[in-house]
Each structure stands twice: as structure tokens, then as C-alpha cells.
Image (cartoon, rainbow over all chains, first blue to last red; front, side):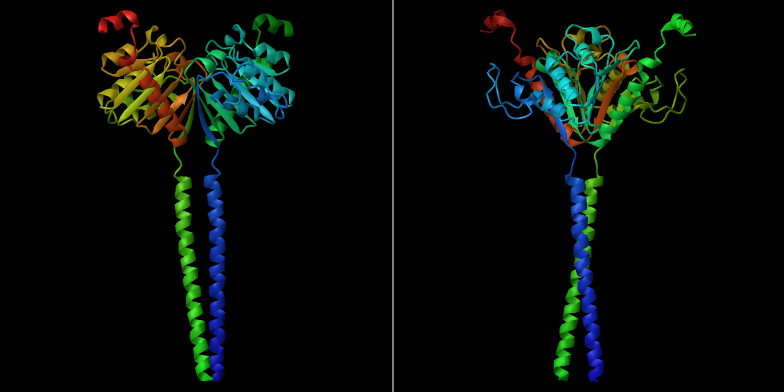
Length: 229
Length: 229
């Protein structure tokens, strides 16, 4: 009897051990799953909407790699965060690539930001509209002079997009052309997002338009084609 | 001894029971948490990107409450899903309200969709740009004649937005003006989303612009103000 009782105790202890093991494993699993799903849920991609027009403020600090020692002496308001400073910050966050697809580009501040990125080694590609490329104050020439790759649509209709993708990760898109009038005068909107559901289609669109407007593909009429023979 | 053995067996069984209970509760908790978080993650709002230009197809079926018995005899392609049919479908999904903030509106098909919604009892509000309101082919007059509330910006700059919010739930926004040239010719983009992080700011922007352009707030210069005295 004593032996059978001892067996039953051992058996109970074994079962108890298994129970505790199951409990521990369950709790571990619970923990793992909770953090995995929470990461998926709360690691939500950036979503920001900016509305224009914006008040004009000093933006010098955005172009400085480190906080300025001497304060900026210009007469514009300092230290204000506006839709335009937000836009510039997002744009200047590019580290590797900037794909820019823009109808009208005459804003000197935005041009300065793109030129700075180019100097920092970011691979910049600009796709624009052939008619608006040549308007007064267009910055496309400055970009080209700096050695940035620029292509333009050649069809009868407008390349009316106004979007940028930084590092194939961050999409900036909306109604805003990159002009001072749009930034400081018009009612405009800009969406900024890292949501891949939006970023991916825009990346595809950029690549398609970039390839379609490769100058090497342009035909220069029968005369040149004859020459090439 | 037998009593102490019996006590130890009872004790072991109790512990086993607690172990099993913890295991069951853990598994239940795991299950609950998994489904709760999965729901939060997978109940993702609609996110769609449409690119233009689009091929022109027959869109008659979109305006019919029920599938047509007799086939449409027009010469356009039938049964194709294009970015434009997607845009129309989203627009026509409005059941209660449609807030439309649009720079240029001359597309007859989009106007027909808005008029249909209005006839179906959807409360439509249209905010537009004063200069583009009067261009050739503008549909703003048709909307006004049908009794739709239209307001327009009165400042020196453009009301350059091109967005619509259906039922305070679905945002349609992008570079696309509601013109035939934009739909059939230009390179354009439209984002369609139910993501509240994007919808809410646009709703706020609409309400602000709608209030700011209330005709009752307009002043008609010193002459009229004198008359009112």
C-alpha cells in the first residue's frame, strides 16, 4: 500500500510538474504573441497631413547640421514649427534616395533642400513637366546645373503629379506644387506617410514614368534617324 | 504515516489542479488577446491609390441602381474596371454626406455622379475656387441650379485643394482636378482611404474653409454697410 501511495505521489508530482510547465509555456507564448502583435499594431507607420498656406518663418536652422552657436539675425519669426518647416524636415530626412515627381518647381527653399541632399550624396532623380520646366523662376535649371538627373514628360498633356519619395520609404504627396505661391498663398494639402500601401504604388509610378521618359528612347524625327544610318 | 501520505497526495492534487487552471486561463487569455489584437490589426481601413490618365470606358452601369436588362449600345469599351470607374464607385458610395473641395470641376461624368447623390438625398457641400468656377465647361453652375450648396474662396490666392470626403468616413484626395483633361490626359494620382488619421484633418480643413467662406460673413464694402444702417 505504502508503495502504491508513493507511486501515486510521484505520479501527482509529475502531473503537477507538467501543469506548471504548460502554465509557464502558455504565459511565455502569451507574452511573445502580445509583444509581436503590439509591435505590428503600434509600430504604425508615420501619417501626417499638412495644410497650407503657412506663415513665413526663418528656416536657416533646418539647413545647419548642428544647432547654431550664433543666433540667426534675419527679421522673420524664429523657432516656429509650421507646415513648411515640417515639409522641409521630412524632405531633409532622406539619406539615400529622393525620387521627385513635380509639376511646377520654383520654390527657392525647396530647391535649396534638394541641392543640399544632392551634396550630401543622396541620389536625387527629378521628373517634371516640360511646359512648367521653363516658367519664370523654375528651379529645374539649378538642379540640372548641380548635376542632378532631371527628366521631363514629352507628351501633349501635363505631368501633374506633385510627389516625392525619400529612401523608398517616405511618401510626400498632395495638391501642393513646389512654388512660393502654393506654400504661402494657396489653400493646399500635403500627406506625409510611411504606409507601404501608399508608398509602393507611388514608387512603381515613378519608375514607370522615369523609364518612359528616358532621353535615350526619344526619337528625333526621320531626319536624325536617317543620319544615324 | 499513511495520513501524512494521504495529505501529501491531496496537496499534490490541489497543486495539479491549480497548475491546470493556470494553464487553461493562460490559454484562454492567449486566445482572447490574439483575436483582439488580430482584429485591431487586420480590420485595416481601405487604402487605394489610383493613377491617371485612364482609358475611356462606358460608365452607364455605375449610374444604374440595378444591373441593366438591355445592354448599353454605346461604342465605348464595356465591363472594364479603370481608375476612373474606381473613383466613381467610391464617390457613389456616399449615403449621407459629400463634402467636396475642388479647384476645377468641369468633368460631366463626375458632375452627373454628384447630381445623382444629391437626388438620392445625400447632403452635398461644394467649396471651389472663384476663378476656376467661371471657366469654360465648369459644372459649378449645374450644381447650383440643382440646389446644391456651393461656396467659393474670395481671396487673391487659389483654393487649390482637390479632395472629397464621403459620409465623413472616406477621403478621396490627390493631384486630380475634376476635369476631363486631368482624367483622360494628365499624369495624376488619387488616394482613397478610410484611415481616420487622414480623414479627420481633411474634415477639419473642410469645416474651417466652409465657415470662412460663408456668404453671410462677406462684407460688400462701405456703401452697403452704410445702407444697412
